[in-house]
Image (cartoon, rainbow, N blue to C red):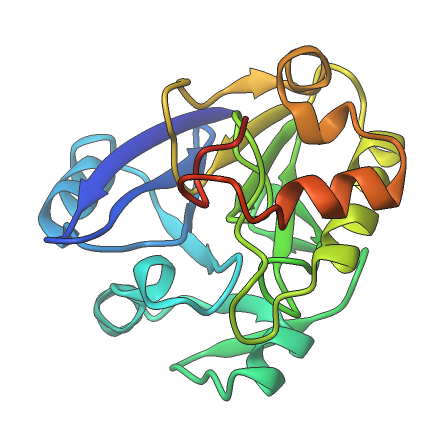
Length: 219
């Protein structure tokens, strides 16, 4: 499997969305902001789009869903919890559960429910590639002070990923804050402080500390 990263932005948000693909087909993850660049890659590489994976419902991760479903008429996947809790709907929406496995053409996908940033946030495992949205960044984790956020759930999600994934699993987050995407779990274990905090009280206290100058100041 190959992964193409698109660094896209609006006037406020800077995102990373992805296409994961093989010789016959591809999937689009969290499409936002720049339809032409993403669509041109699909056309230039002769990729047959088979589905769209949405890690969560925030606008900067779903901004282009309607345009791509209108053009390609492909299924869209989001966790049932996320769709229900945030009243999300779109054309061809399929809701999924934790550890659900589904196949789109020749590509196998496993959904890992990882609440914390939102109540139904999901990471998608494709081969050894993990698309994490705003659950996990290379440098840290998503903010936990918005509607549906839960820092205790985030702790549980990180512990689950650490125990469930292989060390060579490659992380592809929805945003970057200094590091390039595409780092392994082993790298995060050594460089992401939230993967080193084993006790809930230290993890939650550090993420929600009042002294951080910015929610993306992970250290």
